[in-house]
Image (cartoon, rainbow, N blue to C red; front, side):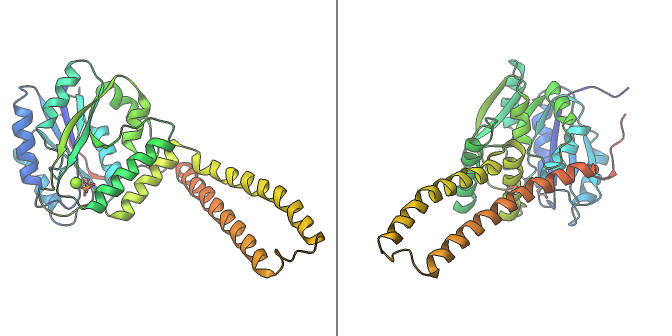
Length: 312
Ligand code: UDP
Ligand code: MG
């Protein structure tokens, strides 16, 4: 029989040797103050800086810590997914290990959960210690996603959230490969509410989310929750066809009246290059969706665990 817990905390860790100790300490303080049974599922996402060994050590002295160790780096969203798979709590909180999401906020999330909400997401009212570029791209990202996806994903909200067991079970049944967890949890429904908090600066180390990873996440968000990019091709098609229908008689009449305005190769070249460009971009978008289809069709496991926690 697997043991029942009230609270699970899930945190992904990728090369955070300067942080793991402090993180476990802060989580322990906060979770002990609830007076309930809790566990901390630490997912080591293929660290190579000694975090893995440190996590093992911490787990051997603190029985609340359950390490899940990956065979290699699979990325943040997949690490959190594994954490959700292993979590046994009635309420599961996803949190970053870098202490940008203050563990104390978990108590606010729990309070809302006790009021009967099944998804309590933490909204970043303010962010500290991040470059203007990161803040600007993040803000743009949330707004574009909000506009073009079919699910209303809350603005300025990361993965820091509390999920009820019911929601976690649904989430665990969704095995899509290119994951955008905050979109998935919005899609599921149930009673959802946001709690504002101030996002702190990183405790130590550097961001593990450089621009290319953010771009990948954004692509997962868009392709996972919207057909809009596929439709853009048809909009362009209609617009160019419409333009041609107007342009053909206009040019014909101009020619007949002797105007040489549209003569020469340049106009032809521009038209060909423009349409060629639009067609290639459309093909690229199609390719993006097809590649994702192919990944799903292969049906490989989402992650490979080299050490799983024992189930007592
Ligand atoms: N992370 C991970 N795998 C990765 C990248 C990041 O597990 O490939 C973890 C990282 O250790 C941290 C969390 O995901 O606990 C958030 O990453 P980070 O703080 O670098 O992102 P940011 O807050 O800068 O967006
Ligand atoms: Mg961070």
